Image (cartoon, rainbow, N blue to C red; front, side, top):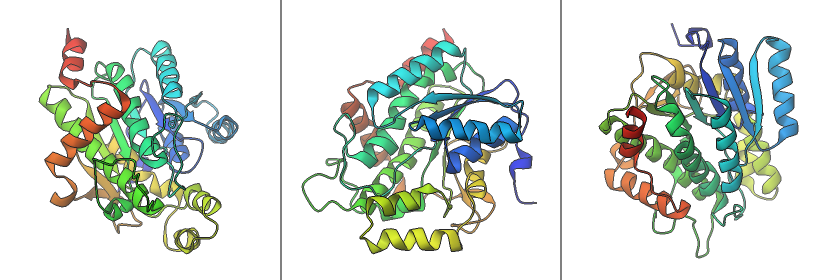
Length: 316
């Protein structure tokens, strides 16, 4: 039988952070985790939408444990504030779904001067994970799930010497694909480092296929004149799947006791279908690219992330 939300094990006692849970994939992920008893932290930039998401979940699940927190992944200050508050209020974090994202934006910058898509989709989640990981190391089998996209195949020239796509000729779709490939590379490298350090925390990538969420309409609002944005906004609702189905790959990655870390989960028919394990080809998993992305991320964020040292301190 195809894996579905009914296969999610009991999550009572577990704390889950879901970024971008004010709508789309994040809302459906939060809903199903709450249904299974988890305490879910809805992390969102738009607090009005986040409050509506909380009401939506509680209208169906009155006893759901849901907590709304402000998080803007395009601001390092906001990420620091969010992480500090969550750590102060919870002894441990069991699940981190790095789900939020922006798609095919104009050549915008984050509050810290990063290209918006690489800065939000990758660097923001890299930094958030760095800050929250110490609270996950002692949780017992904690999991991190990074949401990628089929757009990773259209990343164009993966030039880690120019991670912000500067120098002219900015293509919003190439930049989006670049950030989504970075999500996969971050998954593989962090899982490898955790495994090498002897940690039981595991990391996964999840591809929702073509899921009908606000990403498509938002891209049209940002680029009303461009046909490619109009194409996706028109056809994803017709040939894709619901947000609830699109959330299943990340839910399976985060909760199925039988899946191994460092794997990718996607719809069976690539753009739609039940969640299955996908292959990450050699072209998209070159060890040199994984290591360099890590180094570039540390440099851009002005941090030194020694995973082995974190694990050692957690076990002391």
